[in-house]
Structure formats: C-alpha cells, structure tokens
Length: 270
Image (cartoon, rainbow, N blue to C red; front, side):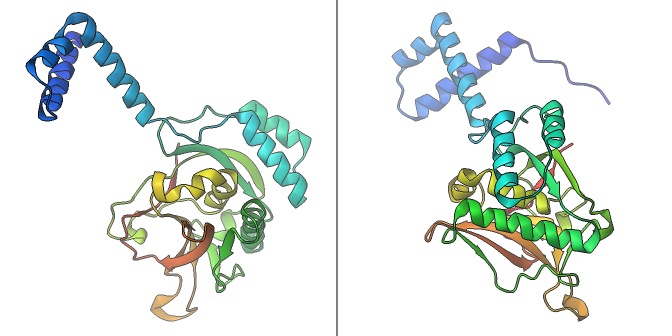
C-alpha cells in the first residue's frame, strides 16, 4: 500500500484559514473582514482560536483527579461497609492510569464482591444500593422485576469469570450508538457492573445524560432472563438512564434487539 504524503504545516494553515473565510462568508462576512482574517498576524490568532475550540470540544467536562476518585471510593467504602483495606487504597493510588482522552471517556473502577453467580448477585445489589445512597430515595428507581438471583441475571462473559477485585478501568460511554441491535455489538469488552460504578461515581454526569450523552446506557455485559424458558430466555439487557422530568436515575431492562441509536453500548478501553 502506498502511504500518502504528509501535508506541509503551512499548507494546513492556509487550508484552515480558507475554509474559515468560506464559512464566515456564508454567514455574511464581507471582503474587508476576509482580508483581516487572511493577514499574517490575524490568521495566527484564528488558527489558535480554532485549535483551542477543537481541544475544548473533545474535553470531558466531568474529568476529575485520582485523589477525588479515591475519596469518593473511601466514602462509599465507609458508608456501605465494603471492607476495602488501606493496602487496597495504597495500591490504587500507586497504579492509577492517566485520565483518558475523549469527551465520553472515563477513568473508573471495577469493584466486585464474591465469586461466581452469588458474587454477580452480591456485586449488583451492592452497587444499586450505592446508587440509591448517592441519588437519594426519591432520586433513584429500579424496575420492580429486576431480580438479580441466579437464573435471572448473569455475566455475558460467564459467571465463572466473576472474582472479588478492585481495580482501575478505562471506559468509553459513547460507543455503538449506530447498530442493528445491542446483541450485534456486545462483546467481552461490554460494561456490566462497571457501568453501575460509573453511575454512582459520576452522578452529575448521569443527571446531565439528556444533554451530554444519549438518553441512556446499556450494560450489555449483563444478560437478563425475563421469561425463563424458550426462545425469549436471556434476551434482555440491563440499562441505566435518567428521567429529567422527575429527576430520577433508573435501572431497568430492555430487549437486546434494541436499535435505538439514542442509547449507547459502552465498552472497556485497552
């Protein structure tokens, strides 16, 4: 394959200024304004301004420090009596990855309790309890049929993969909006309990979901068995969304054939 030749930097500047002038002309800019933009000094100002705006457009508004995240985890540990040790906190402080690039990329945690199917249930219930504690009694809701017992809720990767762990993860909340269905895009990298952690760790982001993300997020790393038997068994998936009318975060289920492009299917990043 023939590699394309790199575009000279001055050519990129010239093209950027030209495209800016063209767009502003469409908005009513006259020739005097265009000459001002093309001048050497002002062109540099325009380029710096556009570059800054591009950087801001890719910045995650909810990025936070390692210290802040560990403080939130410590608060959850104390209030929920999870038993995370000081050795765990020291290890996490020493191994924290940098905050990822991308407007919808987050540094978060995988926090799992117990092993196997019972561990899946325990982890799910503990994180839902934390969501309720963070958002309040009137600020959170769970679909009444969302049973976490064995035979109803399981990991896509298999319950035998569930082990007690607390570690950093990097996630992208903006993936797989365009799809035929959730089942087509879910994979070993799909979020399960990791999405529940994101929900209670970044409550302001969740409350802003209608404006900064899609209306909801699928935890496609979970499978839910609503009907128990037949062709419809294990064909539902857990999701989290936020109802801006009553200001309530909601955890429920949806058929995995959903093609609603407003709902993302988040993934773990390398």
